[in-house]
Length: 197
Image (cartoon, helix red, strand yellow):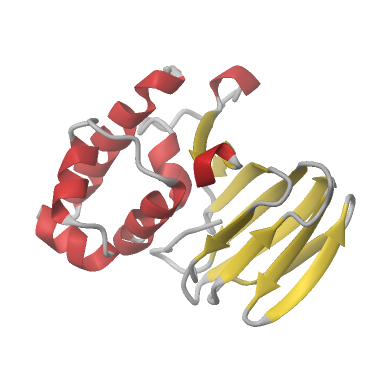
């Protein structure tokens, strides 16, 4: 698998979007209708002219019913993949306070994504509902995290874990005095999964 430099990520995301759109025989307008992302923005992304936010990528992935990690990996499919820390794809949102690192995407009967997330102190990152066929697991490695899920909040500390049906809006909140590090596992149930952390 060829590894891409971080500065090449917008180009890779654009190429992946174009390949997925063509495979599904969709126009930019149809992808816009499915994802809620404007046609001009989709066009800019396809041309590699902009680096989309995490929220924008989630909307596109959900609309196309593909795992989020699809946009962070090469399209080839080797039997053994080593993901060196220096080559893992990183997407930054909330002015650098929310950083998602795609560790791996498992190609199994039930596709599974594993992400490392860095959330700066005081940051709250809102995630939209993923769809009825996505289960999300969160494991806190360092710091504290409050997870607001469907109107309820859950306070978590280092070592704590939680999983939930990700068909509801949820927000990751770092209430602590230090940055928070956690892992997110997304399991896509069904044949054609939608995504999201």
